[in-house]
Image (cartoon, rainbow, N blue to C red; front, side, top):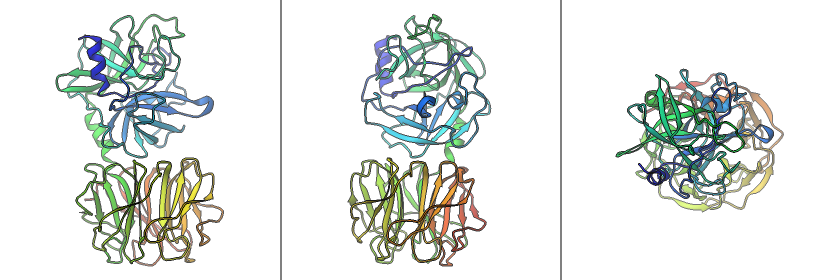
Length: 502
């Protein structure tokens, strides 16, 4: 097969990546072959790990809309001498960029990595994205059968090449299998110009067939022969096999049954219900609450898919006594869906635009006018207050700064004084209460809890009908936790509904 055909087929399935692989203690590197075609749909992730002097890069394969498969060594404290990576939130801030064929481009999808799930049998880790990719970026398919000795695989990377330290476009390399074991592939460049260089740990190794491109391995180590700044000439590399990991990947990804979640009394029975966009089909479902913290059989809210929604909130925005839904789309628009009080909606309208920079939002009546308002955290760390008028929202005003390290928000009257407060979960897992002043601003935070790093979605609702604000959270294990509030800023023992809740 000619290199020209290899390159064009990869362009349809790959995105820009960078990485770092290791063989005999040498940090790994990036593909040295020709540029991958720019502006194509792709499913390879560039992982930017750490900040300042600690920054490093890796690559990975999107195997589910919310999960990237990469090398565990990428997240080791010392990549040259990697040890077992701890499950949970990465120790270093990590951003994944997917579907972008140029580092200077603006397309694709970018999201923080919120959780790591390491494999117990190899140098692999599943990295969960804080927000799912749009449906236009399709995950890479896993090969159902192993690669064979003598097969030529294709890799892609944004790391160092023979002539560039930091190239601006993705590069491909042809790697030939010289040997394989039960867990690994031993590789070498198919030609003297093919190698993996610094920037490619975690890069996918793909096999081309008539039915398409399939993932057979993840690059982990390389000698970096021929890479810029290296005197080594050998192009040997090692990859972890992925053809027998379908069950583990599916089980891990299956925990994220809910892409987004919020809660409110959506069916009018005075008991809080759960609203969640299902990861499998993009439909929004309402799960009725039983008034004690459990949630029952779900029903579709409407027949349309909620594809590409990235933020969700619910409260009475229109002032008619019925819970409504607000959703932020990846196109930057904010949509209002008035509720009908019977598990459905009565239409939709665009109530704001330019919300691409908003990464968190929560809803409540923050100024006491009986109409739902919004509090939103911007990517620049500012917290904005958006007063609602029953139809749309006034321009936002900065209510506080320094919110960069908060990863979840939820609003309600947690202190029992009739004013809406905010609960925020910090990246550290600490839980902070910001009591409201009744005008869209808040008092100094007080820490009320620890250990919330395992929660991935959060919402307020009165699930037990005692007129006190409670918290509902979805754990990384998929279960729904309902924490009864005590009107003093604290919570009782949670009631747990196992996942998947159907």
